[in-house]
Image (cartoon, rainbow, N blue to C red; front, side):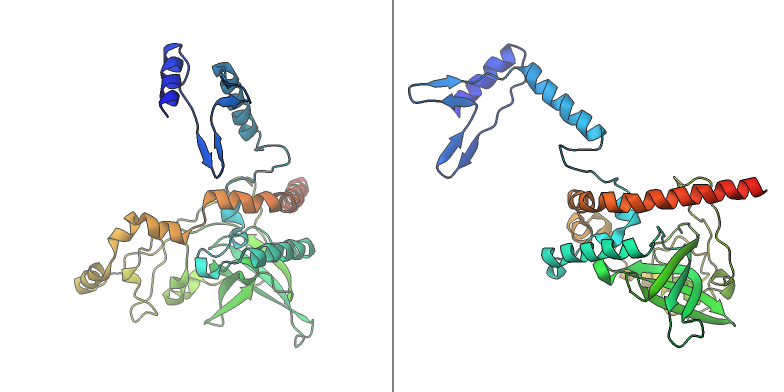
Length: 318
């Protein structure tokens, strides 16, 4: 250790960066020394060589590859395909099962197009139904919630039919699903829209013959700033106790807000360990999507080409 400090001082005097590393392994001690049978010679590493390695590494990262044979997926994949990420709860983790499920998910995606959508997007789902005259049923609705991981991923569609709210929970990788079509791709201010159950029907009513809306700019997903007006109490949940951004003022007596303040937990937003247990680390996300990047990118490119060709055909017809 004393010799390491001496080398650091010598490097600082000659204008080099005093960086060193000492590894202690069972039966092995490595440092910046080259040992032979007769003497110990110091291995001098020029600073220019270190700078070249740093520049090479940074250029590789800019090109999107961390080395030969390594593929780096875009960081937005964790929001576009959240079902590929494992369950954040450690007790539910199994690496072998997760890997086999990802293989099955990619195989299912090769048979059916599962497009990009978010909570607040309007979807149309065709599902096989032996009791239907056409052996298939189609449901249109707004996605009010999605969750699950792996083959257990799911999403809920809601629509109002004959003044009656209808909700259907679909398993995303269910073999009965024949087609998933995005009629309007957008986001909302909240990650969950379960409060639409207590809202007026016009916020959840969509025509079954709704045509898909064409997007000119495919790079940005729009965020709908709509604020929903809820019906008077009673409600299914105590919405005043939730931090909702897409709901108008509830107009409740002050005692409801006082109770909500008593049961609130404002310290949770500062609890780093709680946040750590609820999310998957970015490094693990990169490892997962590096294996599925090529297959998913091929599907995205095919959908983008089809969308652009459809837009051009529509413009020519007009």
